[in-house]
Image (tube, rainbow, N blue to C red; front, side, top):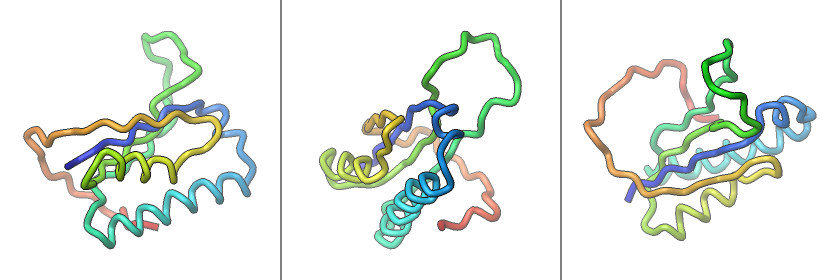
Length: 113
């Protein structure tokens, strides 16, 4: 079954990470992506870019920062994957998803770390 892992957090908190903190968190993310890819369980993974312009919405302290789509045998497996990604300033939400009219976008230069 497909699951989404939605990563909510503070862009300001992530921007304040030291190089060591960034490397540690991103290293764990890369490790999980490699493992899931090897098992053919990895779908799209996106890290949302910080907004470049102010929108019509009130500023929030927590934003959607990233999305993983993974294929797992059970909700427990999906939650275990999300647990490996955690960091102090984020909240992770795991939800089952169903493909709805999937399309194909060309993705260039998007090799897993």
